[in-house]
Image (tube, rainbow, N blue to C red; front, side, top):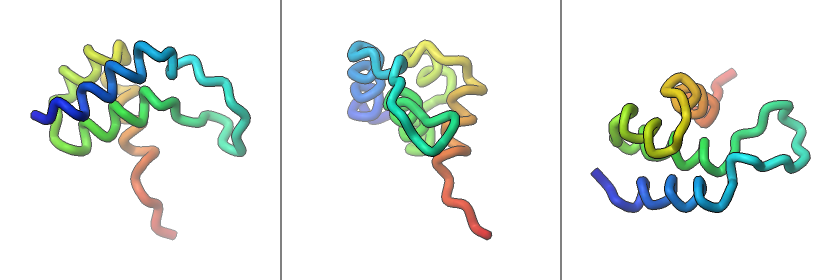
Length: 73
């Protein structure tokens, strides 16, 4: 496990990044917290641990992982 990924989740959560309301072309832009959680899971962190630390449902973390995947057309 990498403490760096988990530290990023804690930092994003404590900064209130989950409440980001910036304008974007995407109707459902990912917050910094969701990006940090997705990055941690993609790097091998446990989904259960990441979801608990981020205070997000596991499915929300998986949705963020999916949203960050490159799309091939």
